[in-house]
Image (tube, rainbow, N blue to C red):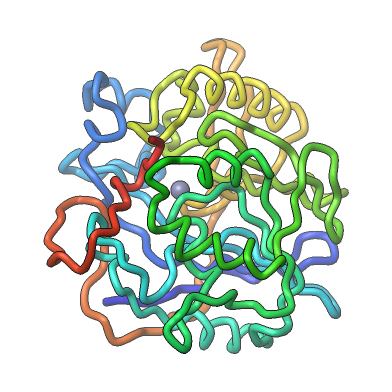
Length: 326
Ligand SMILES: [Zn+2]
C-alpha cells in the first residue's frame, strides 16, 4: 500500500514535531550498503532485535521521511522526501509517484501557503522531492511563501555537473529561478533552528539543531545503526567523500553522546540517542519508542524502493540510483 504515516506529535521545546514517513521497509541487500562487510559482522555491530534494521534475509531496513515543525504562526519543514510526479526511472517506486502530501499537511492543520521555511540537509532526490509541484506543464515551488534553505556549496556542486541530474532540474532549479532560496551555513540561525555544516555525504550537507532543546535533524550522516558503532563503515556509493564523512561522524557523535542529544535521521525511522561505550572505544545507539498516529492512503499500489528496476523507460532522465554522487 502506498501511504504516508505520521508519527508524533513530539513536543520539543516550543515546537510540535511530526514525522511524515513515506515508507519504511526492506530497501536493499546489505552488500549494497556494505560491500566488504559480512552479514555476521554487520549483525554483531548492530543493536539487538528490530533496532538492528536488518531483515532475516539480510536486507537493510530503511525509511524515507520528512519532518514538520509547528508553533504558533510558524511552520518549518525539514527535508522534502521523494515527491510526486517526478520521472525517476532508476527508482521505480518514486517514479511518477502519487502520495497524499498536501492532504497529510492539511490534516496537521496547515496549507502550502502557511509554510515559512523548508530546510534541506542536501539535494539528493529523497530529500528534495516535495519542494516542487508539476503545474501548468512546469515545475513550481510547492510552498509559495516559503524560503528554501540550503548551503551554497551544495548548489554549486550540483549546478556545475556537466550532466546535471533530473532531480536537480525538476526539484531545485525552479526554487533558485524563483529567488526563493536562502543560503545558510555554520552558525546561522533560522527561526530558532541552528545550522551546522557536515560536508562529506555531499559537499554542502547541513545538520539542523532546534535551539535550546538538544534535538537535532542529522540528514544522511548515517544510513544504518551499525555506523554508530563502526563509524568508518561505508554508505555504499552514497557518500561523495567517505573520509570526510567519517570525520563528521566522529565529531558529531562525540558531541551528541556528551550532550545526550535526541537525533532524527531520514533513513533510520525513529529518533535515537548515541552514547559513549568506553569498554569498546565506540558508541552505542539507543532508539526511542515510536508513536503512530494516522495513515493516509493514496491510490498507487505497493511501495518500496531501490531493490529492482522494473520501470518502463519514461524519458532520458537518469537518477543514477540513490547515491548519485557523480
Ligand atoms: Zn537520503
